[in-house]
Image 1 (cartoon, rainbow, N blue to C red):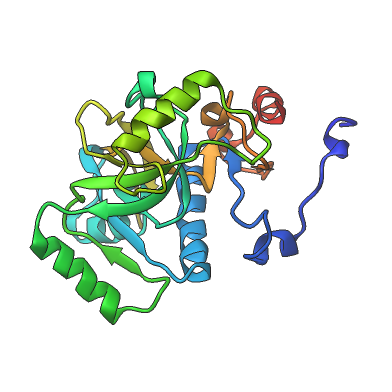
Image 2: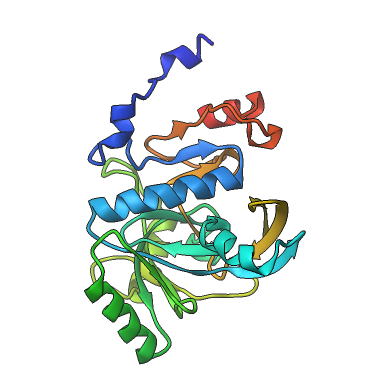
Length: 262
C-alpha cells in the first residue's frame, strides 16, 4: 500500500475535462469486455472534442453459442462493441500483430489512426454523404470494411527520446512508401492471418451467450487495454482501473497490478 500511495489518485475532473492530458490516457483493465466498453465511450468523447467522426463496421462472427432469438440478436449486436471494429481519425492505437518485424511494425507498436481507403467510389461517396449530413461526433456505419486503414507511425514519445540507428534505417524505408510526404503513414490491409479470434460473454434480455469474433485489421484503439497487452510497453501516462467487479475474471489481481506499475 505504501507503494500505491505514491501515485496520483485521479479525480472526476481529471477525466471529465477533455482538454486534460488524462482524459484519453490508456486505461489498464483486466478483461477485453471492459476494454471495449471504455474504448466505445472514449471514442464518442474524443470524436466530439476533435470535431470528427466514429467509423465502424462489423467484425467477422466466427461463432455464437447459446444464441438468443432472432428478434433479440440485432439489439445485442448494436449495443455490444465486441461485434464491431472502430476507426477514429487522430486517435492513438497500436498494432496487434507482427505486420513486418524488419521494419519495426510489431505487435504493440504505437500508431495513430490517419485515414481510410476504399475499394470503390460508391463506398467513398456513401461515406462522404453521411459526413455531410451528420454533425461531428456521430457514428457512421460502413456496410463493409474499407480496403485499408492508414496509420501514422509514432516514432518517439517526445523530442528528447533517442532514436537508434536501426530505427532510423527502418524509418527511411517507410518514408519512401509513405502515403504522405511529411509523415510516416502506411496502409494496413485486411488479412485473414491477422485475425486472432476473441471470445466475449454478451447478455441479452433473458440469457447469457458466448460470442467469438475476428477483426479484419490488426489495430486496436489505445483508449483502454488489458494489462496483458500493456506488458513491456512504454507510455507517458496510464490510468489503472481498480474497480470492484462481481465477476472474478474482471477483477484486477495483484500480479496484474505489479505488471501495470512497471
